[in-house]
Structure formats: structure tokens, C-alpha cells
Image 1 (tube, rainbow, N blue to C red):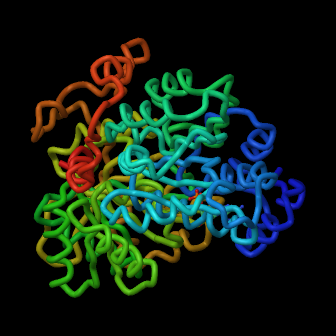
Image 2: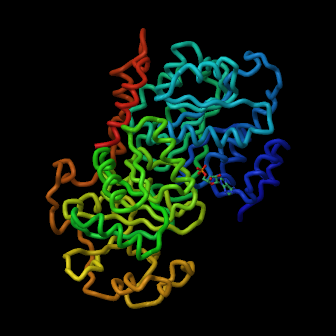
Image 3: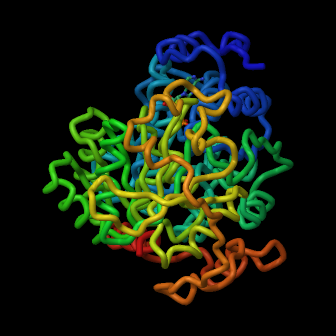
Length: 496
Ligand code: AMP
């Protein structure tokens, strides 16, 4: 049963802000987390992207901070009381914007600091005093070391997208930041996926946390229709054009694995007449924000991006996500396709699988615990090409071979609505099940020929144990004092 925000007895300024947002009922994560946070308990929350988790932590924290609300201009009356840490600049920016909206009728101040931007304006804002500070770890450490940010009155810490922070290698920074905070505090940890590493992080830094899991971890949104097309590298662009045309798609995210590939693909698609913009780690912060903004405003059709853009970015109504490259990391698949089918809308996720990607597809199959099937596909042109089409065989797909739409599907995903060329291709042909282990893939890296294993075995030593021993709290000049290098390094980790 979903309940209304009015049941929460939020302070009037917060309730008014929620009403302005147009929210009526709480999402499942909000329904479960808000009362727990209001009671002052630690939370370990597993929630998919797009589930409303920002409001799930921001609203109860703002509510608890209302007792400190004051209109004084003195910075001393506005110490940092809540710290929200996120792994990427875009996420930090997005969360900060939402916090500002929820707090807009209160006197509680919020600010965001992240790398790649001039420190001066951030410093000025910090010096004026802010109650809620949203930050990426590296830049926050720079401000701590420059004595711009004082964290000794922090009462609440949110570690959002915690798994990603560990992936990026933020653990030492995270440990250092946490060492500056009062021991007595409330800690909320959110992660889309709960690896053993994350569980151990939680057990180190959370006290008796309430575990909240609104969806099976590593699950993909049930509203996303997933297809796997086996397409040769040279045919991928043609396949993309064909699917976009056949589906009458207006906008889509197209994910690639490398920055170079991202820029090249965006240029090719642009030449082929699609309004395209590229988003990757070599773009300046300003360019990245502009690219996102152009996509949000509908000025561009395709956002070609690397995994920098995969997590948490909330752009409403992205009808489709294309994995032009199958991600190297199966968990990135979950995050990539989380860009579509948000807030209950239906979405399409298409992956182009080259023959060398079979091991990666097998990893995805294991992670999402869903059988992946292949079926033949033909391009519109006369010249036949050898290619196959795959899809998820979990009863969620849009079309059945030679049959009607599955019961319970939304009309938009009804077979009868399929463009002729897709219907044609969906007629039963000799479909064969995808059997990832039958033909060992010619892998580009021997690593991908290894059997799938979770990133850290449950019983192995957690990464931060060794990291903590190897790199005790830094002393002297901060490594983060060179933000540009830090940021470049950050994105190199996640991009090949
Ligand atoms: P998040 O998972 O926090 O990124 O939120 C995803 C999207 O859902 C954002 O656009 C929010 O504004 C929106 N949202 C959050 N809570 C609700 C709600 N209770 N009702 C409707 N939309 C919501």
C-alpha cells in the first residue's frame, strides 16, 4: 500500500515544497526509509536508480534539521549539519538541485562542491555557512584541508551510490572524510547494488542499521523491455538507425565503453543526420552540463556517453537506452538501463552484442538472473547480413514470436503497435537459446575469459582493509590539491 506524504506530518515549508514538486504518494523507498530516518536510525538502503531515494533521505533529514533553522546572517549559525557524498560531479549537482528544491521554503542552506570547477565560488559559499553540504570526496578534502569546510558539527552523513564510490577508488578519501566527523552521528548508506564490500563498509561505519531493500539488488526495472541483438561491429550503426526508425524513437542514450569510441560515434551519427551530443570524462564540466541540458531540453536526439553518465542521472522520459558496446562490468548494465523506464514509465534497452562479447553477456545473465535468448534478425536492406537478435526471456518482453502481446503489457508495448518491419522480424524463426559457454569468445582481454566472480568474494579481505593499512590518513599537502589531475584519474578508472 502506498501512502501519502500528508501522513508524515512534515513541517509546513517542506510539505509545501513537496506539493510544488507534484508528488502525491510516496515511492516504496520513501515509504520505508523516511519514517526510519525520522526516528534517527542508521539506514542501509538498496534502491534502484530513479526510485526517489534522494527525497527518501533529504526530506527526513531536512525535517530533523528544522529545529536549527534560523534567519541569522552569521556563518556560525549555519554550520554543516548534513553531509551528502556522491561519486560524480553530475550526481552531486543533481542531488544538490533536488535538496535546494525541498528546502526552498526553509532557512536551511545547502551548497554543492565538486571537482573540475573553480574552488573560489565554492569557498565563498562555504564561508557564508551551509547546513547541507553535497560533495564529491576529492573536492571536499581539498576544502577541508583549505579549512573552508568545518565538519565537526555534522549530525548526518549520506553515502549515496556507495558502490560506485568504492569502484572509483574513493575508499581512502571516504575514510579520511569520515575521520573528521563526530562519532555520534546518523549515517545513511545507499547503493544500487549490495556487494560484500558494501556490506562490510556498512558494518564498519553504520550502527545497527535498518536494512531497506525495495527491489532485489542487481535487479533491472521490470518496466524495461530488454533486447540483445547480435550485430557485427560494422553493422551496429545501421542497426541503431533501423531500430530508432522502426520504433519512431525521439530520444535515446547510447552507451559506449571508451571515450574515444564515444567521440567517434557521436561524430558519425551527427554526420548521418542525427542530432547527437557526446558526454564523457574528457569533456570539461561545463561541456558536460551543457550536453545534458541540451538533451533534457530536447535539443539533441542522442546522447552518446560513457559510464560517467550511467549512474543516477535523472532525465525523465528517456524512451530507450542502447548499449552500443556491452559494458565490461555487468553491474554497469543495470545502471545503464536504469536510465530508461524510470518512475514506472516503460522503456527499451537494446544491447548490441559482438561475437567477442559473449562472456560479458554471460556475466549480465548471471547478474540479472535472467535467461537471454537470441533470434535471427535481418536488416531492411536487400543484402542479407548474418546477424541475430536476442532478448530477455523472462516474460517481460514486448513481443512474442507469432503471437499477441503478453497479458498485462501496456498498450504501447503491444505487438499490434509494432512497426511492420519489426513485426516482420519477430515472426518465429529458428530461435536458439543464447548459450554463452558453448563457444568461448575471442576476448580482447584475457580477464574477460575468466569465469564470472563477484568483485569481492564474501570471505576475502575487504579492499579497504588493505587500502587503510597501505594508505593511512594523508598528511601534509593534499593529493587533491591538484583537482584537474584528480578528476582525470577518476574517470580513467571507469573508462577503458
Ligand atoms: P531519484 O531516485 O531520487 O533520482 O528520483 C527520481 C525521480 O523521481 C526524480 O525526478 C524525482 O523528482 C522523482 N520523484 C521522487 N519522489 C517522487 C514521488 N514521491 N512521486 C513522484 N515522483 C517522485
